[in-house]
Image 1 (tube, rainbow, N blue to C red):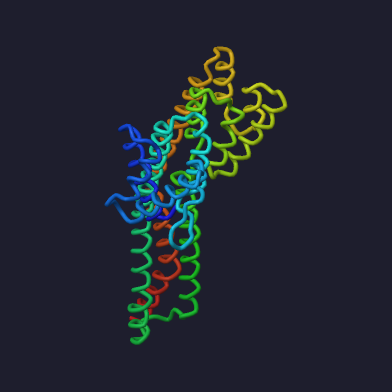
Image 2: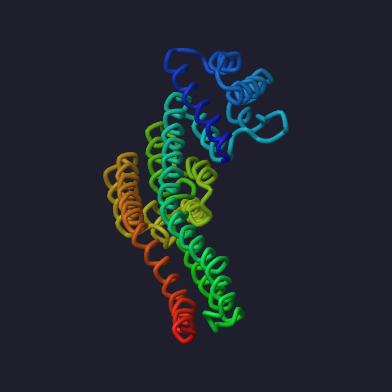
Length: 321
């Protein structure tokens, strides 16, 4: 979601949760938001949803059909899919609580990602600026005074190689940051939603399609699709998850225990907690490695420039003197 859309959706979710929690009906809550003095984007979203409800649409379908003045969708597919599934439980207050937590987590992830990339970006831009100053100011000054014999083509090739190395390493670092800190909902979110569905009496075979449509993660979506097919063919729960090759043995062992105890919701919650702790540890390690990684990348770049440009320049200056 874009920044403005994300803020509108999060505001809509938070306001709806409060109104439903205070006893208002779904229709009245949406209508009140549409006529409130809140942000224009929130009013627009609420009015569009309310029009859908007035036409007899379900809440999830009204969300899917909601458009802004330019005809663009107001609510992402993940959001719509979540409510399409939760409508079966009839407990929309819990639904808004769950999706609000997810949106808040996503906002914090974006903030962590920006924080993780800001320092490396500053160091890299500073290095490039200093290098550009050397080549734009220092080298022409030296050449005018015949203080260097290094050819411009040699300098250009050396600088180009250094910039190539810096660009490749920087892109690799940014891709790693997006993979660790960004992306859609992960396994923790899915298993916690499974627990919520299980407590509402919705079988896993009905919960999986809604969760798979909500994640926006192709590998996880394929794994859940495989689980769904295996369950339909009569395979047991733990075996269906194990045979995907996607979920670790610890999680499949948890599901096996859950099948024996008859309390799948509790097991799903434990699996969700396991993934949440794993993801948090991974993010903490990555954030801790950001500064040394940025220094290492920049140091390698400066070493290349020093070896191929600065030392020949100093040698040329020494020979001229």
